[in-house]
Length: 472
Image 1 (cartoon, helix red, strand yellow):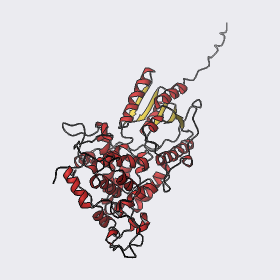
Image 2 (spheres, rainbow, N blue to C red; image 1 turned 180 degrees about the horizontal axis):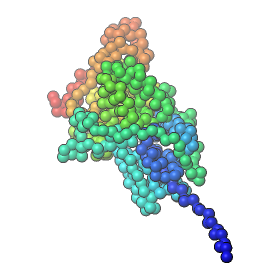
Image 3 (tube, rainbow, N blue to C red; image 1 turned 90 degrees about the vertical axis):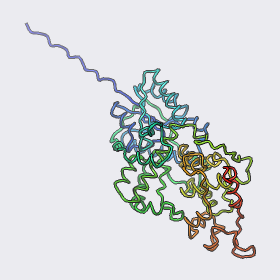
Image 4 (cartoon, rainbow, N blue to C red; image 1 turned 60 degrees about the vertical axis):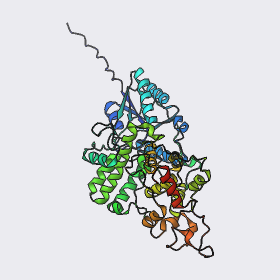
């Protein structure tokens, strides 16, 4: 008797696993730990960006940053499509939209770069609660937005470093994580819907000289700048007219460039210029570890001094003149006009403009910080607020009473007046001897420009500041 053949049962393929990567301030594919972890954990990945109305409510969606963000999203989508994927764009409350995408694709985990602001920390807590109730894991990754995680190094007996130099020493001794390559392929589920990508052309009110955004542009800019200007960075980074700084801050703000990768590539160059550039990158990390431990410093003094600052209402005409670049101090006015035209400002110029508002006009630093956030394409809550506090003397500066004299600083860092002439055309034909002090020209001198006189005498401003600080 012959046995009847057994009918083979068809094998069913196991269900495909899915993970979501929520992009925030990390709009790149190179060196992206959340994306690499999601690709390692799941068969398919949803690269997601949510346009959150909470950002608008908080006043963080200034036109220049919205336009630059649009470039970043388009560039990220283009890079993903080259790898077989796409960026999924949604609009709405971030927790609601992430939960909706998780339901649509059946994701088992969500990956996210850790943030340090109050807004970012609240977002992480809300996501963890809502996703946890659905059995979905939230994986938060450190050292994505910064080179070193904010809590990676701490002083003895404290939760963060309050002074930069000792932080820099410890930070420099730490080994950074390995730089991750961009993925070769990204498979995205077909079932997840997305919205059309934005365009910077549809954003009104942007600065005429706003730079283009995106990882591709950022990587190209760094490569070109590193070849041409990095070796001389230590000697030239304060040269206002030379404009030899990297101008990478907008790309770092949006995470189009990895700070870990930049530190590694700069250190590979070696030399004083590379060391000075790495030190500037460490300042970003320093500020992030301060705000991670003291998130209230985005709106409150880090070191309260009980200053009776003038409010915007108290000094309305002075504040308006400062914003419009009509203070009568050429280097300050050049800085403010550059800000309005480019949505960016040279770092030395930022210090001078901030010192003039807070120390000479004695206006509350929050007034200036808000104006910078309205225009700066790199308007970063962490670095903007804490840099303003550093200048105002309420932050981490170990010399809180220092006052930057705009005339002396102009002569030192713009000795020929080229930076001033570039941004203040009224002074284009003024002789170098007078370009930083045009009021010294005689009233009847035909070379005297149509330019406002000083808003305040520097000696009077200094005396008021010292009196307010109890130094007289």
